[in-house]
Length: 155
Image (cartoon, rainbow, N blue to C red):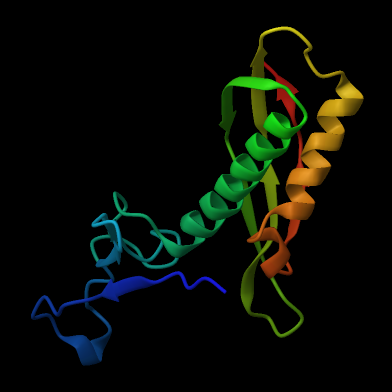
């Protein structure tokens, strides 16, 4: 099986760590050389201890689910003989508290808007089926207990 690696690194900014007044900014590095500025969410830890311009783990989780659905959808659409000209999604994750009172991302709603080109455009039923296949085949969706809803439209 494949392995997928990420390096996560945090360095002290010299602040009083024991008092909890330390920066939550850190970096994610990936094998292709991309480094992503990361931080806790400003809704969890207020700036300046968090970095609102960085990606937080909750955003990354939502983006990961959206990206996985996109990639699996494109694969299924190509297999079905359809040509996707554009695909965009404004995905939203909702945090609630679980039965132990611990916050978790309980729902992710995907809102893909897809534009097809060429002849043989999919019917609404075919488009619904493609999204079903994408959800069923998405590695990330198959790895989490979060509810995922897909609300698609055509462009």
